[in-house]
Image (cartoon, rainbow, N blue to C red; front, side):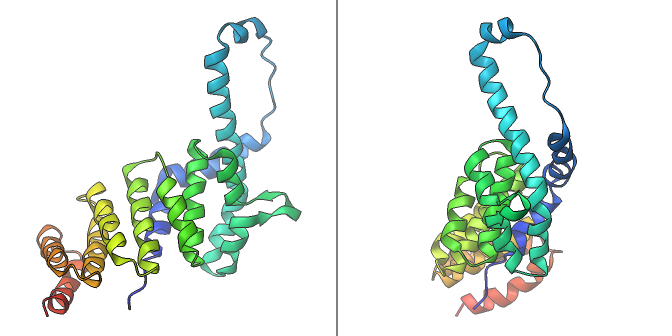
Amino acid sequence: MLKPSKKIVKKEIKQDALLTNYVKATSFYYENKRYVSYGVTALIVLVAGTVIFYNTRTGNNEKAAAALGKIISIYDAGAADPNQYKNAIAGVPERNIMGLKAVVDNFGGSDAGEMARLYLANAYLYTGQYDDAIKQFDSFSGGSSMLKASAYAGLAAAYEGKKEYGKAAPEYERAAETVKGASEAPEYMNGAGRCYGFAGEKEKALTLFKRLKKEYPTSSFARDADRYISQFSV
């Protein structure tokens, strides 16, 4: 039985400039900048509602970015040592490194907090904690269409890991439609067709594989489509 394509989410997260540049570049700044006294108490009182809301969001984003900058190297180490994913989730208290779960719990909703959510979801996926992965992928908000598609595909991979193919297939399909025309789309479409087939919805599977061959004829997944067409035509 095929396993969920766990590499999809990690690959797409790493490709997004928001995650690569935003986390690594800004985390240093936020860790080292000094608090500045603005001396404008009267103005702050005058526009209290707007300023408090803005500062809360900005403050949370800065804290999340700094925390994410510290934990990201541990997450990356999981590629060589899967146990590091567990450390990335829980953090390393003795080194004053907040885990991804804590970052999301404390700062989820901010831009950097939502990036941390994708990393957390992917770490759960890699450690086989599918229900936790589903919760985080499903809760992800914001980001580029590429990141949204990654979240949909991650959700699909988690359902596929649980062998809930009927739930996995439409999520893969949604991911493919979100980045239609992009190089990642045929991989997501392949996942959708595969899961529809395993769920017993063979007509949907065949339709998708035929579309895959037509819309992405040069992709490696199009070349594999004939095998699935033969398998699900029986």
